[in-house]
Image (tube, rainbow, N blue to C red; front, side, top):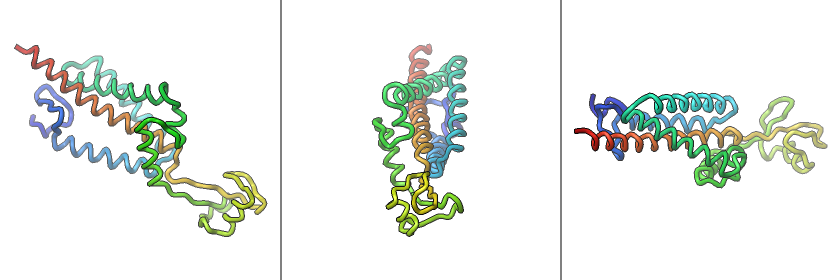
Length: 205
């Protein structure tokens, strides 16, 4: 097996901390492409799918860390630990409600995600009865705003309008946090595999 045959550590392929195989670079490129699509079209359905996939993946890492050996165990253990640390920060150190759904996160990752969200954000109004998309300068929208209409209550215009955001912030930020956790898990996994390899080299006769 050559270095370009696999993106994961094996017992035959030396792990270099700052060098990647061609296949690994392709997988990273694919990851970021899929991540961009998930964030661009973030919604509740995608959030549910992503959360379950990542949960199953995390369980797999834990089982691998407990049963494997050598560099494979080092990768799995490093990935699981780094993902757990980031999850701990989001859920227990800061207010997870700000990090997950509001534009008020305090973590550097949340601030970066919010910047990306604002750059992607598209807003529009729709007629709640006909689902007709309305322009921001539509007289009906102007009358709705001037009459004090909210995001789902009736106003003096006699019509109900709905304010829409694309992507959905309440799905975008949780998905972004999960993607950050995957990135940290990958970096931790590489470090874990590298350290495990060094231990193997040091203890080999």
